[in-house]
Length: 222
Length: 222
DNA sequence: GCAAAATTATGATCTAAATCATATTAAAAC
DNA sequence: GTTTTAATATGATTTAGATCATAATTTTGC
Image (cartoon, rainbow over all chains, first blue to last red; front, side, top):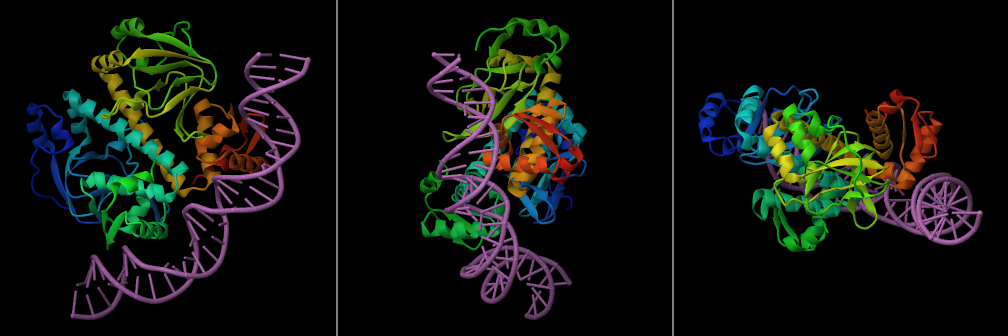
């Protein structure tokens, strides 16, 4: 982790939904940090000191279970807020970890400044509230999927979500991350990907996955 | 569902966190409804017209999967807000159903009034935001549990949560609801409850469950 | 550029928990 | 208060998917 070049004050969740008059304050209070691939941005269980906004790169948000099991709850993209899960009514501890999956640049603001931003910018508060509602909906939809859908369907769902996130039918992800994102194991992902390939729903080359039939993939979910 | 006697303007999430001057407005805009055991308060997929506050009774918040599978995501208690999951950025549809598990009285306010309340009462907004963050944390903790813990541990977790919710070591719940809350089936709940009884961690009489050793039950989770 | 570490590939085995089947009992409805 | 319906009890069977084991290949660090 090290300091990095400036963001454009125009991209992230904070800047997008703050009134123009506030942007100067943001500029004064932000700090730029960059992280190499696989570096930890913040760690589950450690105290929340501030909020992050992703400027460049990709980040996985994940929970650990024991030494070697994880669950990826979200992939964050350019502009996204990171660390807001820590803002509950309990102890201010991160309830997830955030790890760069490629070289990444983020803006960081201390908690106090972010809270001031919420007070000053009603539309920021509103958008954050909506974002929480969206994430809660999605988390509970996935809970239902974990309980009632089989792995192949969950994997189809994960592939479609990744495609949506990347705004492309083509993206790159390791088998293990795909397993942690679908709530299963590496081996099971491997086998089901083979099946999808045989059914010509996807094409795979190393870590690169291309969706060939979004439609047929979607049928696995309903 | 029918109209019911007045709430005390003092108990629910809305009244608790509104400024005193706003309470008169709440009084003008609330509507009282009562639901019998097993009646539906609102249904997954139907449009969000308003927000509910539970005044008396118990409500399960659940998602359906096919005709006969469900997942209970939450039990709501006196004072709790209901329907806020529908306030995301997408279509305003309830993403869960709410069903009375005992005779229940709720206050109802139209969406527009609730949104006005949020604008007028910053501390209501703040509390709602914290509540979302709490629920999101909890949903993701449960996702991790579904993926990585076995049923017996999840059942222990569910029993402890129910105990916490009821603020008592004694509570009442059907086996099927316990299954839907733990992400498993009736039969598996039945068998694991037998084991807990044999281990003297709980006592069961009909639908009534008493926790005998919170401590030992807790060991199943860690 | 090479050694070490991580990721991928693939078969064999095992097991937790779902499903099925069928009494029995309890609760609700008429 | 009896019929109907729903919830509980419990054994037998099946299966999806985890775990284990071991190569082969790729990536990364020095």
